[in-house]
Amino acid sequence: MNNKFKSILFIFISLSLGTLIYVLFRPPLSWFPTIPDWDKAIVDISWLPTPLSSFILYHLSDVMWALALSETIFLIKKNLLFAIVMAFILTVIFESMQYLKLVRGTGDIWDVIFVTISLLIYYFIRKRSLKNEKES
Image 1 (tube, rainbow, N blue to C red):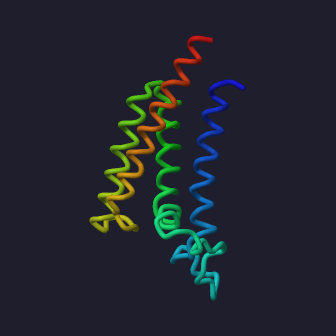
Image 2 (cartoon, rainbow, N blue to C red; image 1 turned 180 degrees about the vertical axis):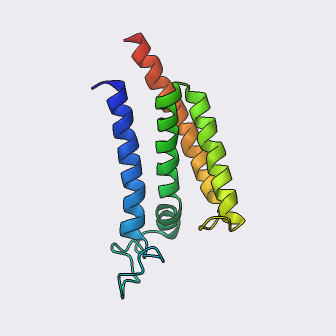
């Protein structure tokens, strides 16, 4: 499997997982007004410990989208550090816009923290995989 295909697959899986979290685990918001009497999530995860269910409901989709964004930027620019920094900056900008009510959303510092941690983990894993590709 070539590297470009792996990158595209990673992007697709990350975006799909982030979208599935919204569709399955969160009740619909105003973007589904035509579906009457739908005020509960399709899949209830309230039985999970609160920190885990909160992470899944409110932060994991942002993490998945940030990882997809960083991989997309890397695929285009071929510069891993640039991709990570740009994904981080865009996350901070978007969360700030949410906080300032310029776009819909909460503007949560925890999103920035979890995205930062995931981007750092992604950076080191991706850097190691690039090194292994060069050696083989």
